[in-house]
Structure formats: C-alpha cells, structure tokens
Image (cartoon, rainbow, N blue to C red):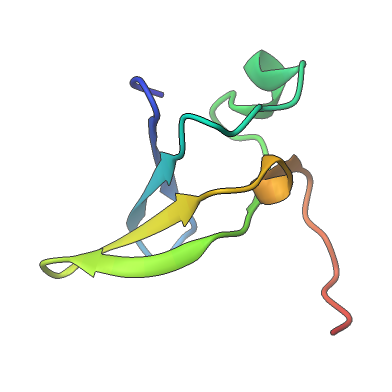
Length: 71
C-alpha cells in the first residue's frame, strides 16, 4: 500500500484501490493488507484510461475475508 492507494490482483489482473482519506481501516490493517490475504472491497468502480479503479469511501469498504453476497 502506498499512501491511500492499494494495488490488488483478483486473478483477472491488477486493480487499483484508492481509499478516501476519511476512511478508517480496521485496526488489524497490517494483517488485512498482507500479500495473499483475502479481502472484500466495496466502493465506486471507474476507469482511468483502460485501468479499473475502485474508490473506497466508507469505513466498511475494506473488510477481511470473502463474503457471500445475498442481495
């Protein structure tokens, strides 16, 4: 992670995750953001050129593990 930007690879390619400065990451963020750990990212998807970017704007936007979406 560099500043408020994180690069992740979901298996289909690298996605940039930009974290709004107002977002508070979980207290165990070192564990959460370790290479190889599974995380769930939620936010606004947009493109910078051809590159996908997710803007996380909520404290709940990055969570540990993989979740089942029911909605």
